[in-house]
Image (cartoon, rainbow, N blue to C red):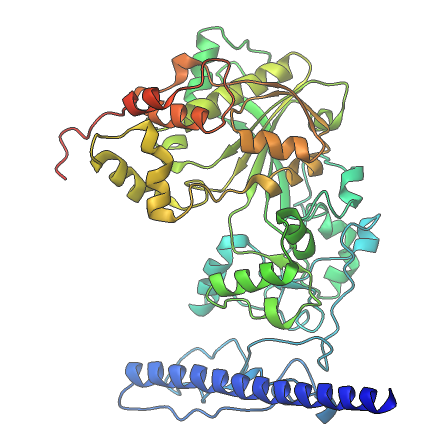
Length: 513
């Protein structure tokens, strides 16, 4: 047994040594490739003054890196590129050091992430989410990604053109929420909320001392109050469908609303569990399908929180925000996924804007009757396939043999995108848990995916309310019939295949194609 054990240990040691050597070589090649690319770009930009970069094959040292000294026993594979001296003709110096930190590793010297216990009983026990690479935060950051969702790229551009100091820390005075949301018991359940930070709106108060010490902690939720001007609502007031109460509906048809903007914050183990996959599968896919944008998804398995570069959501509340979690108050709600073409510009090829307007009117009416109403608006353009893909599908639908037909509605999307829908509503109920919702009395949605996700999250849905027939635009019957046949809720008949084939949208008129 002793000899076998020794042999096994020796074999494992040899395997580990081989893997380490391979990893070192791969890292070195990766760094060299990046430096060669940088040198090529520099030479193309300045052909008369070619740069002479040097590539380092060691970890940070105290002279060049904010990560500090690295002892020989704690050296990680290569993570830095030593760039050439900046162009002496440049009037503005680079805001960054001469070395680029490509990634970090667990137990790397100088890296001590702040404690972060997702689902803890209090915000203090949970700890702050710190994703910043600010000099005072990079040693202690405990989250992958960047603040701002998809807008982090614009921040990078602002820094690159010297419009923004990368070391700037926000002044959060007077930015506190204008309404109180929570805390709710759901906030302390690590399985109920995995795609947003439930404390994201109160971090400036909860972690005031950390912020004063220079730690770059930022809100990922903001709550404010506003007026809304919507033409359809003004028409409802003029036609006496909605009464003026002076509190929710103003004399001129304006609406008083409380709204909350929410940026995504993913707890990776929880997100993976929600979709029934391994965390390693999720991390690998996120790394690969973002072009390797976030190497720490691979190199930092100890960091469990990720701020993805995607759009967030906005909650619009009509009535008292505290009533939304009160089980004695009725709640009317619509969960709506973004459709810029219809919601903003009035396209009639789908029912998105009419259904959104109907949902708002129902929410306002519920609030006027002593309950509360809400709209949850997700940034998931074109079923999260994107607007370019959506327009390509529109073209294919209009040009296909037999015209735009309901029986081909989803298949045309699959031909282009490979999948008919990428909204994947499994994460959607998290914001309802953040609001403290336990029951929705009137859900103005026909989507079976949204309904099933809400119910699966333990939230009761009392009544489902379809869009009224008179609000369906003529060219959107293709969409609505196809969706009903695919499982959408209806109080009418489910269309047969024959009906789907006969349900057609209009052809392009006065457009050459």
